[in-house]
Length: 578
Image 1 (tube, rainbow, N blue to C red):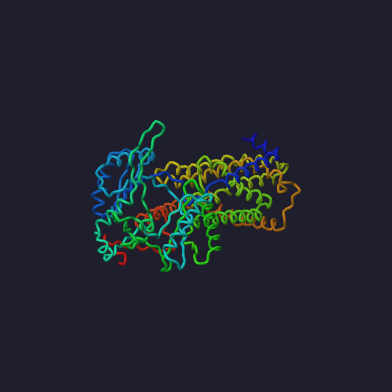
Image 2: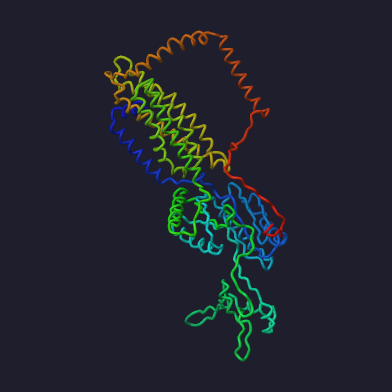
């Protein structure tokens, strides 16, 4: 260790090149590091969704939910199954065990559900999918004094245009009821053309079909037979022939009925200040950058609002607020820490020592990003909390080594290089033990099971990685920087402010602290006993406060929220107006 430290002290150019390399590589990796709300998580849930149009919750439960749950029993990798039977749909949530392979379990679940051949006739094909963890980037609403159908058209347009933008691949549209085609038969016209309701329904059913009719094989090619006359809009159904006679008289659907496109009655509306709106939510997937995703969406909103008058896109929720606040908090703490180190060390020791120790903070944090690919870490609220924690620890070892080098330089006949070497070597063992024990303590987060380990393991990684870089800088780079600074030269004259603070510190040490220390601590058994007794009393008191409930415990603190959520459960069949 001594020879390595001596080598770096004797070759300051190599030190400068190493620092530039670490900062450059770290900054490059920092720009490429993904930003998310929370650390990346493994897939823990699968969903089985089975639509059953026109069914009540009781019918959905007996016809769909129970059958799916029975077929999922015994599949390896499933921890538990929960289900919801609602009107028109069954939703089954499959929770996976920690050691399971989501893809393998999904395949097993699909095979089990596909084996069910007793679903009701009206039930649609099951949809089986993984519950992917996504971050909300931006939620905005389409606001304007226009009909809901116009807002729907704008929503389709906006969704398609946003999906064409780089970095955006997942958008949810909410506030639009399902669409349907309403056919209102006019009774007088029905009687005039001597038709019945059943005849009209049969004509619509037979004319609006999409079916496969087999295949004709020839020597040259195979011809697929398919009847495709399925229509999706009211104007396309108006021309359906309901009745025709040998004289060529044709009765079409529009002659006996009013056909129009409309929305179903649906209680899942979206409102902003009592105005009916359509909301679009832009999500950032696990491989997408949250802030870049939100910025792309915000840029589209600005362009849209600048070119439209009767329609406006209003931001309802910005999912990047937490991450941005944590980044600002970390930057504020980092800058504040550097200023405090600069001021305090410059006043009580030396301004050059203060500069190099303070510079260690940004260098250690930036160079730490070189190790990010090991953990596949993202910049999120948890990892940023780790940076805030380690800022205070980060300065200590630099101060200890720098101050000891400074003290060695005050001795007669000691060159700056010798002072840097001996001062560092004297502190290697205590500093190494101090940083190692801290790193070991935080590394325990790596071994926590379930989601807790994924969350706090990233915080532990940040602390350990920063401490590793801080250790390299304190033992190798800081001694070389101090050895060649003006602060250790024999002809260096401290400023008047530094001299005044040095005299003040010497007075407090020699005239105040040492006399009190010698009187009560050195060879004073009474004081030693009182110290132990005071410690025991405080320890027992702390334990009793927690055990009696006077001091509560919660894993996460209860934070004030800026939103109020109200949920009202109504019995099935309650009208939308209620």
